[in-house]
Image (cartoon, rainbow, N blue to C red):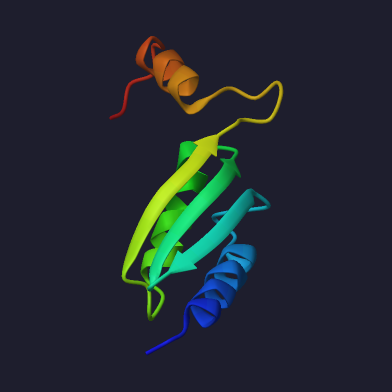
Length: 93
């Protein structure tokens, strides 16, 4: 069984090397194999990718995803993009 410090090291390394997560401000805490992710991501996609990347690691028993989404200034948020898309004249064929 992996120690909490080994799991923490693995999670941090995986988050850092994952292109889907990007350069986010995510802190990792591990207790009894249960990982808590806190901090900030630029999108909901990055938030859930951080959780996905963490869950697939050996030794991780559970993940609490407490990451907040804080988009970069001037960028549209995911809900804004969805609303614009729904109201556009774009159709798929």
